Length: 262
Ligand SMILES: [Zn+2]
Ligand SMILES: [Zn+2]
Image 1 (cartoon, rainbow, N blue to C red):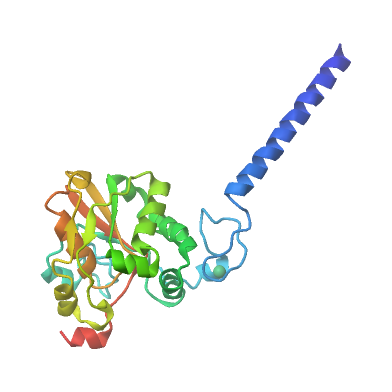
Image 2: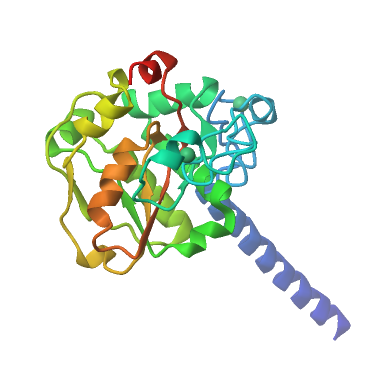
């Protein structure tokens, strides 16, 4: 009797082992243990916790220290709101950017956008989600900065839309396709603050009011520099949405020569 039970126990145990083996294989398929650091390519085994290695972790341009409570730009003093936000009307409540647009983050954002490294959208979205912590629960939907059809075809993807889709998978907040870019605008990088805002005037419109009506919207872009793009998108949505906040992978600063040129 005792022998039978032992035999039965062993069969059960082996069934359990086989099940666990298959289950682990399945887990490894979904969460490969040898995913690489997104900045240097070293093998890491904590991708979903932190998608970069220890060495890169000590050199990354984290957006930390005192930052503007509205636009999330680093401030060199104890002020709550930066000089620009004190004099500029924004159509969004606040911004969230985990990094400044420097060194490794700048390089990987450029390769994401210019070299079509779409796989970076997931880790970037993960980094935004971690930076926002519980604030992410304050939103109902995710919107993204749109491109014109011609520009999107030329690049083959919209980098902000892809970030929105990955953030949606992580947060279960739905993506809304509520914005449209009406025409192609000049490259923002050569323009000063005033020029950037003028360049984008009326460039965006809402094409699906219902999707954001009385909703708390989180608008996503890849980089925020002067806030002109996210402001213009927020302005278009502000007639319908309950509130709008914005997020991006990196917070950039306008080059000094362009600031002086105001
Ligand atoms: Zn690394
Ligand atoms: Zn500010």
